[in-house]
Length: 259
Image 1 (cartoon, helix red, strand yellow):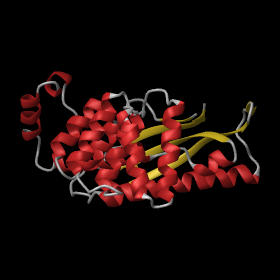
Image 2 (cartoon, one colour):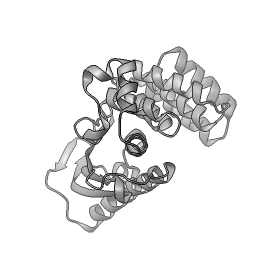
Image 3 (tube, helix red, strand yellow):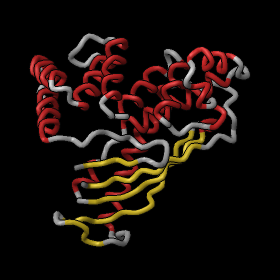
């Protein structure tokens, strides 16, 4: 099983993936590659009927992007919420990403509910978050520009966390590893740093220390390049408002693991 583990307050968590769910995802991906929307929708409906967490997440994405389904943010949000209710926090991150440019206050409410990494200035006390009216009043009392700055950051971070997947280059060469993300919102700068790379044999760990050979370095660089592309796409998705606090810094630690 592939797993992506992010740092504290940012980890994507989900129920254990079953064989039925893996087969569902494979079938949908094959149909998508063949551009067979009828087959995609049939498989999707089967997965939704079986209440598979990834089926809810996939349905939300397809509605949001208009992929084989009529574009509808309302239907997308409905399915992201159902994914969240199954214990798949990916639904929460997709909700934040979609709301950030539509309903900034709602995006921040979800960011705090999910536990997404955010600047302290973008959070409210837990007892305020639990009361919708008090939460809205707290946001209305913020200085001018803070809501826009915080929703921008929420959208970028949620997009990165919600869409990051195990890099194919690492999987192809049986590599595990960890990377550190440092995000400086005021500078629109996302930096990825490789911390460690480990080679795996099919039976388990082959070599525990970081690999130094040319091939592993190339795979490591390609893994980081894929993440950097995702980061740039996230930054481009949300126009950066003026006045973001230059001291804001968000750090997220990712571990890519084969399980």
